[in-house]
Length: 616
Image (tube, helix red, strand yellow):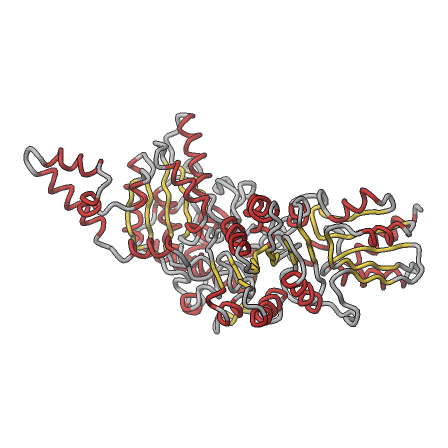
């Protein structure tokens, strides 16, 4: 796409001017928005392909509905960039995902047009139904609009919402954006079902012809139409081609061309006028308007900065904890035929593409369904398999009940690769991996490793798969290994540097690099410290308690929410610990900047220790 001045977008007063435009002007606006998306994401990183695919849909929604009186709920929110531009944030869009800039997801505290928090999948139907129900109780005749992708349709929460939406008699419009992708290619029966509707463009026309014919048939026509509509047998399916959505009690409109504004607006206007729960099925092309993203929508789902002309993302995916985890698991899979790998729609994001290629019969992508993934692991393990579920820390939260009920109670052996543990940065509070330690340590029969380098990650994964029992979590950060310390003593327990000093610094994971930096700063200020790096961080070990108890003063730095953290647990039995952890949600920004603000950079660690020692 050639770069332009964006003059059309920049001269508009949004959202007030939207409904004044003719379709030619709308098309010009869409072109400008796509250019704005590409320009910004190429510099800031973010979700590109999904947003390029919903430009026309976002425009149509805001031209038909009246936000914020009509409440628009975006599922996940990673496809809401055009929505943000159209709702008065175009002048702030250059600061997308930057600290003190606008979020990459929907936040009600950012704009009245963001009706509900978003960042994770499959919650939009339930949230919008709650909003629509509240409006009905208040006598408000406006609509609640849920917009979700077909990838989110693999999440079980959607079906719980749909099951209740169909019988709700509310002004609820559910827009299914069908592009046949979530992050990786969609999998499973739901994806096949939606594709079958997508390819049957005659569906609605056939239904309307049958209904009109019956309406015109004397005497028997209307009673027969009523009988067929009320039937649950094959006659109804043959004549009216009922969809699963209609069987759940929703009206069904579609499939619509998601890049045809007139068709979109007509379909959405009908849905709005029905004043009852409606599902509008829209077909879009992920990455629309930018050839590299259209050709590789998975690669351009979430990107760092990239060069617009060539489309080359500025990322080195092979040099990352995720890739090292995936390659090591592939090596282990060759040695042990019982190892299975499981992902929840994140094959490439978790590095499991290597395992899936080598052992396709032992690789399972279950879609966006983390709860199912955990219980599926339990079933595999009950038959002697060794399941390894690789999942982002913040996504594992959705499997908490299953971890307890379907794994821990029976002490079932399953390995959880907890990817993106700790601060992830630009994606903000919905994605920061700071809660896995508190909730995993609350579950009996659970072991947690937190390696600080690639070598430790390989050792921990080997031990988790081949030696340990119960739930074994191996947690590791986003990005690559920046450690420079001596790796000759790496192991899966701990590393203790005892130089006979009176102050001990304890940490684990990638923060060990910052601790070593802090020690250098302190040494230059004539303050010497010993260090203790934990690798197996839970359960607590008597040997670690003994080391900590031997010091007068211990600083424990931790990239985790404090309540339920490892530092809190050791502080409960060792009165000499000064813990430094995270005490609230962490907003979006550069990961290193955020760590500095949280007191977890090398300089801030050193400053806190110096300040504390002043008053000793």
